[in-house]
Structure formats: C-alpha cells, structure tokens
Length: 166
Length: 178
Image (cartoon, rainbow over all chains, first blue to last red; front, side):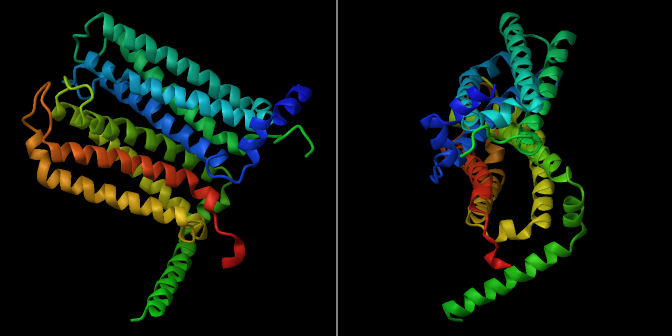
C-alpha cells in the first residue's frame, strides 16, 4: 500500500491540509469535524433517548424535522473527514482503530436510519418505542460512543505517521 | 493601579493558580496513567455530543425548527445536557490540573472561557426571565422573541466553545514560560 500512501501524501491538497500554517487548514478542518459530530451524534442521540422513553410527550415523528440538520452534520464530517484522511492516509489506514471507527459509524447510521423510518411509517403512537425500536435506539447510542472514542484514540494509537520521507 | 501594576498582579495570580493546579492529585493521576488523558478526552467528546444534542436541540426549537414539538416537553431532555456539561466540567478540570500551562498561557483558552461565560449568563437570563413564559406553550407555539434570541446566542456560544476548545492544542504556548 505504501506507493498509494506516498502518492496521496504528495498530492497538493494533502500537502496543504497537513503543512499549511493557516488555522483554516488542518486545525480548521478538525474543528469542523467536531462541530459536525456534535450535530450528527448529538441530535440522533437525543432522538434515541426519546425512543428509549425520555421526554415521552415529545412527538417523535416531529423530531424527524431535524433530519436536515443531521444530514448537515453528516456531510460536514464526510468532507472534513475525507480531507483529514487525505492529509495523513498512512496514519489512519494502517491503524485498526480507524476501521473500528468507520464500521461503528456505518452501524450507528444504519440503526438510526432504520429507527427514523419506523417512526415515520407508524406515525409513532407509543410513548416509548416498541422493544425493537428500543434495541435500535440503544445500538445507535452504543455505536456512537464507540466511534467517538475510537476517533479520539486515533491520535494515540497510530504506529506510522507518513509513508513518504519528506 | 497603573496598567503595568494590573498586568503584574494578574500575572502573579496566574502563576499562583498554575502552582496550585500542579499540586493537586488530579494532575498526578492523569500524568501517571498513560491512557487517562485519551479516556478523559473521549468522555469530553461524548459529553459535548450530549450537551449539543439536547441544549442545541432546544435552541433550534426556540429558533423555529420543528415547531410542533411543545417547548416544555422538549425541555425534559435538558437533564441530559446538564449531565454532558458536568462530564465536561469534570474532565476539563482534569486536563487543566494535568497541564495548567497549556491552558492558562493560551489565547484560545481565554476565548473558550469567554464563550462559556456568555453562555452561562445567557442561560441564567433564560431561566430567570423567560422559562415561566415557555412552560404554558403547546405544539406550534413560538417563544417570545427575546427567548428566541437567547436560543440563538446559546447555539452560537456552544459552537464557539467547541471551536476554541478544538483549536486550543494549536495555540499551545512554547516552553519559554518555564
């Protein structure tokens, strides 16, 4: 994989994100990644808490109006995450923790999407979700905790930083 | 006191605070166990999500999103935000105790503290003056306009706290202070 890593690391965009002294480069992109996380993870977690039976008199289908804000968080993190990956491809792609992070994000998104669809289809009556809904809500919360922790641990668990010798 | 006197008074105060923080056992704990810092950071990020997910959601509703959710009902998620804030106050204090210089000699830290203070005053104004006006509101009803502004300020301040917090590491002081 090293030739691919070296090629990626030497692209102009990778070099700019990694080496520019501008606060809008690596630091700014990392900041956007945090803000996107707050909205994506935060709002979907609030939705999961509602399904688990907290704030029972909040109409759950109405919470789906916030889906655009969740998508905003998701796309912000998709783009910022891609740029962060491009800046340090070797660091992330040689670390098993990175794959754990991606897998748990995918699982959390699938769980919360399934939950959202159920709530939309059933014009959600119960004050708590049905048992299956509560399982999906718990899974969403659990996967988010693992992915956020894995993301934070990426800074401490990498074995290599760059494949290129600059 | 002249400006210079003020500056030296503040500086001596700051040095005292650094010495005191360094003397606390919390800092030793974090510095002794290699994984304490990353684990505390993970909690800090989970706490952030809880805070923004519930308080931020309430702010968005104040601003006019998802109007069919009655505000007083949505308010029942706020304890989760308080839990998130508490986690972050605890882990944040741990970071400060473990590396006081990194924070007290860092511009970004003062930005974060300022945003936090404004958020604090903002929330106090909300509960002192507007909370009781929110309580009777039902689905579709909007909060009075000052409360909507408070929601906007809250959202902006918490985003500011996240930005300044995330950028802290990039404004770390050099070792010239030691």
